[in-house]
Structure formats: C-alpha cells, structure tokens
Length: 92
Image (tube, rainbow, N blue to C red; front, side):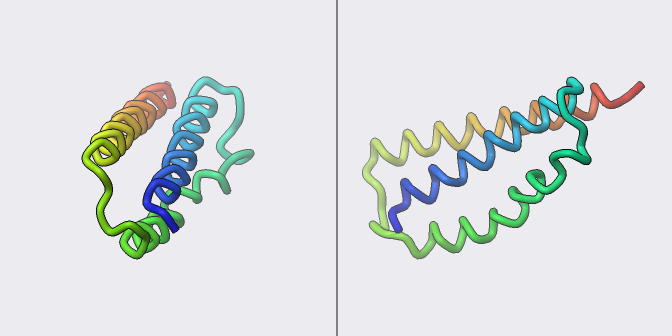
C-alpha cells in the first residue's frame, strides 16, 4: 500500500473525529449516539503506523513530504482545538 493512501485514510478518520467532537459539543448529536465512531481513532492509530512503516515507496518526494507534514500538523491542531472546545463547552 502506498504511503499517501495510508495517510489519506488516517486524515479521513481524524477529520471525522473532529466533526463528531464539534457536533456533540454543540448538541447536534449525543456521545451515546456516536460513541463507536470515537473508538476509531485510538484503535486505528497503531494499525496506520504499522501500515505506514511497511508501505512503499520507502521515502516520499520532498514535495509530498511537505504536503503530508502540513496536512498532519493542521489536523493535529484542529483536533486539539476541538478537544479543548468540547471540554470547555461541556462545563456548566
């Protein structure tokens, strides 16, 4: 499997998690309705790391690395903001 495909699947799950956190924080859905989707990230992360380490090509091009780095950093920052906003919104 190619590294780009593995990263793409990881980004899809990460952005789905971000959307679900935001939706549950503003009250569109409850945690009970989407709790199984929240399990996707911690369960799939080790699988994606394993797939990424054994995927081909062993090295990405410089442009591909920069795009990947930017996408992963942006996703991580948005995930952290969504977590913090969800925690702050959940407080009475």
